[in-house]
Image (cartoon, rainbow, N blue to C red):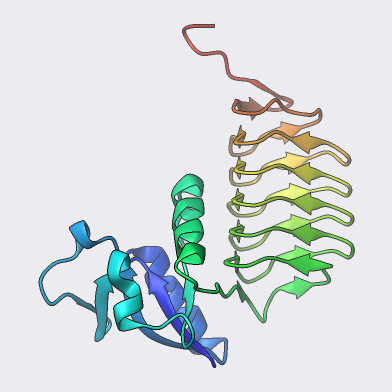
Length: 212
């Protein structure tokens, strides 16, 4: 069975269709999104767009996999968990132009071209690695993380759930990025970061909001 339904009809869904069509042996049969956002008789690339709330009526979990390429980490996690509850399995896309020596990669990951995944790295579920990142050896990337492009993650780093790393960020070896942490583009991170905070600069420092 190599059949997929993709969540969404935005740019990431369009890119997913392209990559699966040109660089995999999977077949995209249709698209789905929340009912409130569907127009009457909506199609996307000549494929039906069906309500996610009623997905099982159109595509049986026993015959189709899901793929949810959603940029927002929390929304991607939500749709993934709802899909699992419906009985669906999720497929990951890993580019054939990715250098992949990772020990394990989870479900619903979107890993594009020119990523280098060094040996003894582990990657959780719902991880997006846009093009051109370096994932250093013995690293851990937990669930629901988004790397943009050209991030350098040195060896033995630990990226916790829900983190977002901006373009050209650089991480020193052995550090931990806290849960739901945002690392600004071009930042040089030399120390562990706290959860639920934003860091930017070189060296990176915590952004202080108006409330302190």
